[in-house]
Length: 409
Image (tube, rainbow, N blue to C red; front, side, top):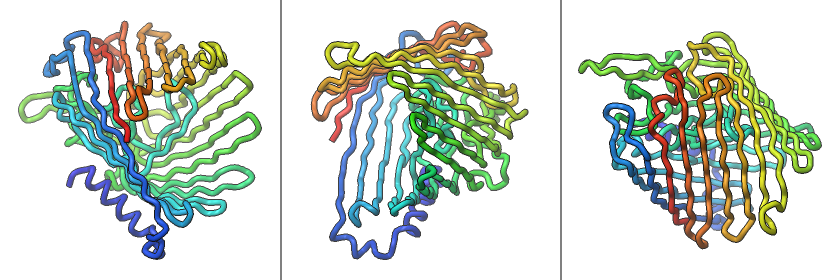
């Protein structure tokens, strides 16, 4: 059975069991909203690929569709959200994929809320690495920044009090990470064969994952404390040789315990940010930290535009038996421009610099609304001076500009 279908069936079963019996009587009061977008993407590569088997085209067009249905009744206290997503890429079959980003039932009580089904949850405060964000799996074929996530089947109970929010998660089904195929750019030296996936747990993708988060706002401070137990969203890779003599990578997903803290302090123009984790289950126990600051010059651009300057440092103490990361001893320097104009123009640029190897990864993201329905987006990725031991070494010739025209309705 396809993995997406399995995930959808789990989410649908959770919703069917959760929607109150009074649903039919509420149909007359139900509000239905429909929206979404369709977009044309084009990646423009400046160089030919470095790896054998990759598509040699310098232009990589693709089409993206995301729809959204929202059903609301009981004066907004009950809601069903459905957000399917699909991409068609003619050059990489593995990048052609579909996912249910959300399919869930939400009930809002006086001081509690309950979400059941497929949902997306974000944790974290830093700009260049979302270290503590662990609930959803990364959609690895969408981009290299790890910000695109697959929908996660879950039961999510939130309790609100004067002392903060207490949030509980039970996740009955694990989503495997997506990876580029043989033809795809921005892939590892050997193709990841997801048909050879291994799990530490005998329950495999049906191992129950549990998480808890406590979040509180104390004056100028936003603080989050969390713990996760279950299947790691990061995979280790085991080289294997196929029957045809081809070397591939088999993903191995381990059981981990991860405790985390994220803190953001706001003082006038300053934002101070910190994320840190302590993880067990990937080799030796280790600590990782991401932290930094952002200073905003309000009104520095034209009459209304703001300019923010960002500096963050990343440390990761994992050993060589854990999944690889580029954020072992890295510095991020960047800036953010928000014009606050009618076109909602935004711009973010920066560089991640490895203080040990001197490897650099440059990024640029810009968005601008053309009219009420059309938007223009651009993303630039440039890799420089990556040593052979760097996880991004295989992408050394994959510098590219991605442009998107999206129609929203």
